[in-house]
Image 1 (cartoon, rainbow, N blue to C red):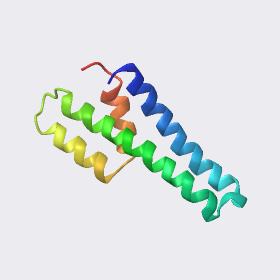
Image 2: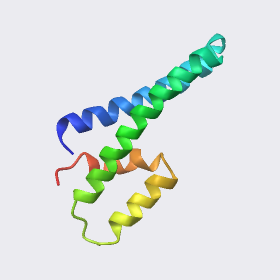
Image 3: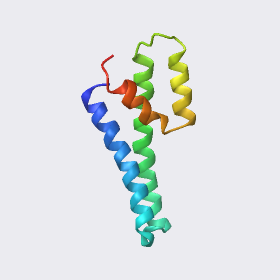
Length: 94
């Protein structure tokens, strides 16, 4: 991943964690007029993040050719694995 992609990835993760923490800490914002735009913003941010991660998986050479499919499947079905992927592989050069 390039430096701007890494910065975006970590800012997107902080945005998602911050959004959930804010909604849990501030009960007065748990109504549809606030949740709908905030959730849509989170959806857009997360979709771009997943695109960047899957692009990095596809372009990165792995020693095992099946590792691309394993990482892709794990990230697709268990989203927090994207954080693990970023720490193990995403922050390294291709």
